[in-house]
Amino acid sequence: MSQGHDQQLERLTFFSDAVFAIAITLLVIEIHVPHPADSSNEAWLIALLNLTPHFVGFILSFVVVGALWAAHHRVFGLLRRYDPGIVWPNLFLLMAIAFMPFSSALMSEHPTERVPEWFYTGTLLVAGLLQYRLVKRVLRPPFIKEGVSDEMILVLRRRALALPAMALLSGILAAWWPGPSNLPLMLMPLIVLLVTRMTKPVSVEPVSVPEAE
Image 1 (tube, one colour):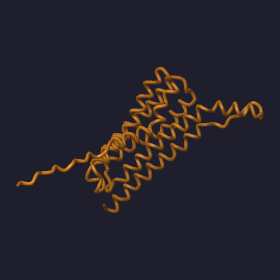
Image 2 (cartoon, helix red, strand yellow; image 1 turned 90 degrees about the vertical axis):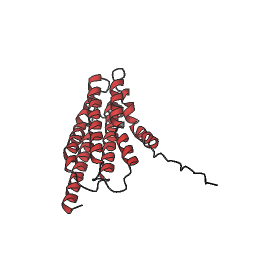
Image 3 (cartoon, one colour; image 1 turned 135 degrees about the horizontal axis):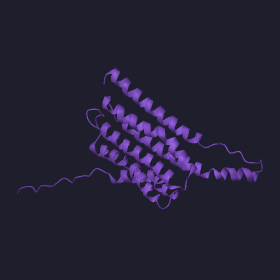
Image 4 (cartoon, one colour; image 1 turned 30 degrees about the vertical axis):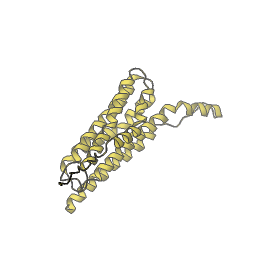
């Protein structure tokens, strides 16, 4: 790879990491410090308990954005050449990531209402589909490193479907149970692990040919 292309790939990766870092930091800024009416222990405990939906929303969104970053980091680590065609798909994914703090704050402020929940899961669905599109675009020759097997590419593509699948399921469940409907998103790391273990190379047994007498 030429030095110019190497620098372009590094700049794209560093810029992406910066957007992920800023978005994941802004998640906690949406949790505002409480100001109870008095300074008693009971008032402080009640004020902190009232922030429970915000804490849960922060943890959930942190896990989701962290999983998206981990996948992005893993996929871009397999590149050996810069591909100009990935710039805009990458930017669209980063746009969805940068929007996450708002949708997370909206859902955390109204944890038992359907529309905020649908808005949140819709944001995750869009982010997941954009990630899947980017993974398909990135993992193709001649831009990937030598030694990257077809099985590894298949695993990464299937793993990229975990978020849109869980977001869609959460959105459907929110029609009946807004709030608890986020449980599938909390289980996403386990789903990714299950998909990884299920997608294994198929070993072919060598066929023995009887020797002629």
